Amino acid sequence: MLKTMEKYKQYRIAKAFYVPALLLMIIMNACGSNEKEEAWPDQRLQRWLAYYDLSLDEFEKAGSFDRSYKVEYPYDPLTDTLFASLYVYSADSLLAIDLDSYHSVLEVKDDGTIYYAGREPDMEVGLISFEEKIRKRMLFCGPVCIFEEAAFHPDGRIVVAGFSENEAGYRPSLWYIHRDLSAIRFYQAKTPFPTGKIRYISDKRLSHITFWFDHIDFIDQPDIPL
Image (cartoon, rainbow, N blue to C red; front, side, top):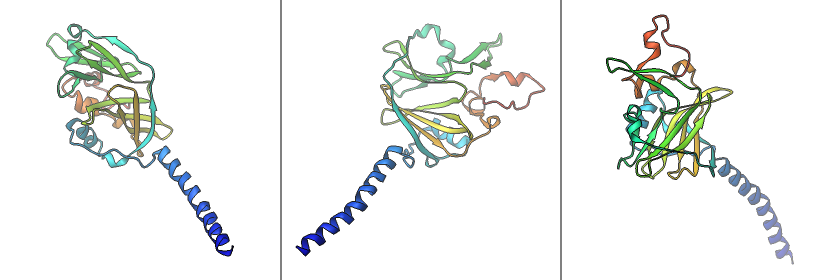
């Protein structure tokens, strides 16, 4: 009887420790605050990270969600020649990521120069299927998001790099999107950036394009993301 009572006491002690510890592990896994993505040698993503002096180790999972809706547009390659050179193409060239055409205003000058006249406050990232002749919406956001770069991940996902704003400011952000667009995993770095330093699009990815502020003598570096 004493042995039985002693075993029961040990069981109660173990249960008292194990159950809260298990619940804590479940909660931590659900929050995913320490979950990170491994790096892979993609030149576009590495260029974006290097520009802001960042590494993937600084990004922690901030959320994940599934999507049941679809936003699709017919795609006609004959009417999209201006933006086609800016697409991020998959290795087999059957897909392309469109970071610009929804919100960017481009003009071609008489001398052939491409002029970036500005952009809409809302930004969208699209996935173009050349076989289906469809452009599918991957991400859409108002002024609180800035989508700057994208890459095709070796495991089939798509990665979009940029910034998202909260009470602390604009924080470097990564969106990992399933190839069928059904799920998104969202990562953020902790350190915010001032808007005047968010210059990757004009300084790197679209550096061959003339931006509007290049033609205004009294503006040096406008305090807006570019």
